[in-house]
Amino acid sequence: SLQKKIEELTKNTNSQKERLEEARNDIKEIREKWQPKVRLLARRLSEEYAKHFREMKCEGEIKVYPEPNDEKVDYDQYGLEIWVRFRDGSDLQKLSKFRQSGGERSVSTMLYLLCLQSVTQTPFRVVDEINQGMDTKNERMIFDRIVRSCALKNSGEESPQYFLVTPKLLPNLVYPEGSDISVLTVYNGYGMIPAEE
Image (tube, rainbow, N blue to C red; front, side, top):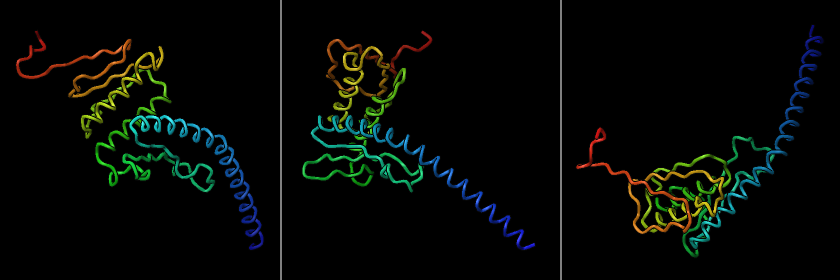
């Protein structure tokens, strides 16, 4: 009968509403635990990032988008944005291939990776060809920051090993006194002794 169908649909609708409300409450509970941690991590990254940029007499920060307190946003919509300023008199701009040069993007990305490494625990780190798209000045500056970040007196006994692979190493690089840094140079080319010998 029609009345019976209406009652079943009403019961089903009420059950679905209850399940929906339970799901919303679960999401809210998870969000309340998750958001403060995300904000804290983003603030730590941004502070470290800003410090690197200040040392270069530039400006940089990392922002969470959209704002973590927006309850209508799904988790998969959240992300981090990198904002930089390389020139006096300009505003902070979101890092993009349209606004910054290739060297500026490389420097910004490498500094972001260094900041990420400061909040993660790993036994070793490998960076391959960081100097892609960088001029000598930026390459030297990034190399200096990597060396300082992995020198034992700055990072402690528990710091991970750091492997930096590069096809060319700048001359006259400065290594902090007392640092536990080894430079291994691999030669490959015409006139080299064959591997079998």
